[in-house]
Structures are given as C-alpha cells and as structure tokens.
Image (cartoon, rainbow, N blue to C red; front, top):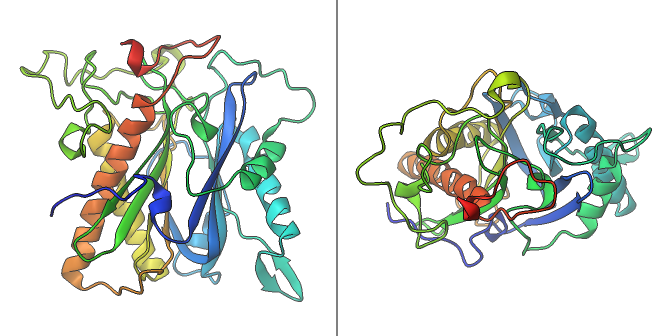
Length: 334
C-alpha cells in the first residue's frame, strides 16, 4: 500500500469536517473542536487506564443515536469537560442537533487530557475557562488550522519534550481519504531514547516531521521506559485523538476503525496505553466518498488509520514551539 498525503495533510482532507482551535496562553491550555458539516457516524475506543470523557456511551454500536455533530478535545483535566457545553451552545445557536420531542440537542462527545502541571497559571477563579474556549473554537473552525502548540495541544507534554496538537491524512488507491488528529500528552516518549528520531519514522511521508528516519545504530537506551513526571505520573497524561474517513461505515465499522487507529499510538509512543494514560480514539465516517468497502479494502483502511495516526502524533510534537514558563523544551530545541 503506497502512502500519499492529502493536499493539506490534515484531518480536514476528509470531506465534511472542519477544525477550530482556541487557547488561553496564561493558563497554558486550550480546546480543539472537530465540526461535522452533517450529522456523522461515530464511535470510540478507550484503551488507556485513566480516561476523562463525556457522551461516549452514546457512541457504542448497540445504542440508539447513530450520528453526532462535533467532537471536542480539551486540556484542563476534568475541568476541560466544560468545553463541550460551549460547543453545544454555539451549535444550538445555529440550529444544529439531534431532533427529539420538538427540540434540537447537539450531540458533542468530548475527551480531556491532563495539562494542569505545565507551568501555566491555573488560578482562574470560580469557573474554568473551557466553556468559553469551546464556544470560541467553533467560531474559528475551518479547513486549515494550526498544529503544534495550539488548541488542545497548547499545554501538552510528553516524556522530556513538549507535546502538541498533530494532524495528518492519507489518500488510498481507492480514492478514500483517512485523516487523524491527536492531542499528544503521553506519559511515554515519542522519540527513540534521548535522540531526536521519532518512533513513527517508518510511516513518515516526505519530511513532515524531520525526515530523520531511525538512528543508526540504535542507542543502547532505545527501549528504556522514559516517563513524564515519574514521581507523580498517575493521571497526569493522555493522548486523545480522532480518526476520520470519507468512506461509508456503520457504527460498528467506525468502532473497528477506532480500534485500528490505536495501533498508531503503539507505533508512535513508547510506552502507550498505560494505566497512567487515558488514551482514546474517536472515529468519524462522513460517507462523503460514497464508497462502501470490500473486506480487503477494509484491511487497507485500518492500516492507513494506524499509520496516519502515528504520523499525526509525531507531527504534533515536531511542530511544538517554546512559550514563556515552559517546564519542558520543544522538539526543535533537542
């Protein structure tokens, strides 16, 4: 399978999606929203041991609601779940939502990452800023958006380096597009040992995250487990992500896509899916291509989901930039 990036190399190469970011630089935290132009088939898979979520039960294939209107990724730990309320408010103003009993209710699943311990000022008073950040992120939504130190990746950290918001896309030979978006804040490392080389190197397209390949020879500490905040790591992490396609999928098919995309975590982060992470992938299928996949094409779709996710994770860390008060350096300073 030959890998080819879409024109933007962003999740918005999947027709029917837009992305908006909003951040508070003083707090060192932010929100990213993925807006669906039409109600979209969705699912979720949680494999980390410390997740923080909203409206994920509705996404299970056996539950009634088939489609959603937006997905929210937010910093702020449990405080960040307020971001979904701001997104709901913005969508309600636009008349968007699931119709029930004469009312429209925007369906907005959300997930959060822990970025409280990143050097930002968390003394925000009675209410955290995330509801308003969610509202602002909707207003900013477009096909083009910033990655790195932006949106939900504003205050993200990894083992020894700043994390960030990453995105990538792949166009398959069938014409189907796969996109990924990740807010990268793992307990583990995205680089090989203490080098600048990314674990995701075999999947890189062009020089999207440095074109360094793997180190040769591999360093002796390549497989050493490097952890962020090893003294108090529990619950202080999480990579939250979205994988999307324009193929036609059922909720069960979207669930399989989310499962496959988790392989991208394992190929880009060492270690991943730990008890100290809340690793989670939402899956979206807009159906805009009109393509119903054969069994063989479904295997290719899953492989592309994994490789695209690995690239998105690496790109998020690669694009991070320095900011006042940082407790870890960006990749560019290594």
